[in-house]
Length: 303
Picture 1 (cartoon, one colour):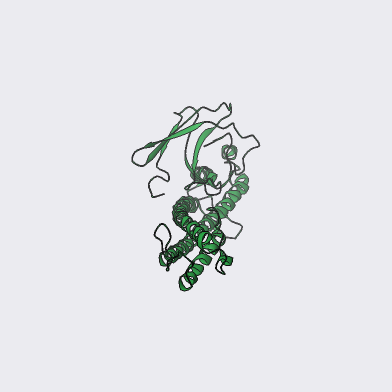
Picture 2 (spheres, one colour):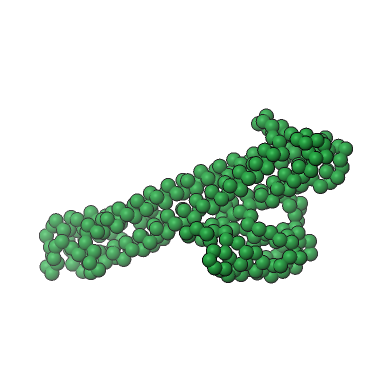
């Protein structure tokens, strides 16, 4: 949750409110001059009307939704990878234990793998697993040490074939995670393209306002800001959330001591980690309104 005392672009999540302010100001300008009178010429030599700018805001909101959906999809894919890693690591440790107990002093033992940490990356995690899989196969085809029965079966009942199948499933899960992350990256790129065009339009609007509204000083005085005024970050407020079944969350927060507070904003980012670039504006209210938000953000889909 953030509090703010000025308007302007401060990051991706601030575009919606700033663009809405520009769209409303632009609409007022058209009514004062003539319907459709304010048409911008952008740096790329294309033109833009107020209706087109409003449509650009809608497109941005839609694309922000795509980013959030793909964040959830990538999170689910990452969760699947972690589940498979957590299942395979104990089996690898059992295999290493079997080697420690029965294969020391053999050529096989010279190839004994070392177990990776659960947080190890893809290559670091898969390498010892693949090594164990091939070593296990070779051991099954070799001579059994005293007290060992071939083919080798781990204490939990896992054989080499099922171990290999689980490794294969993990490899496919990693591939799916990569695919989801690529799609997420594309969605972010499409969002950024819209933001760049919107920023150029708002800049052009401000730069042309002096001439267009020369006879309407009130329009100059109320021109939305593109960059925030110098200021400071308000002290953080305390917030807590409770589930409102079946798919909403109620967030209540304390009051800010900031004397120049303009509004409270609720921003969200789907997934377990906060990313300022992916955060979106969810809701806002003035200091005089009840200090709570109710939202279904990221609660109406798996993950």
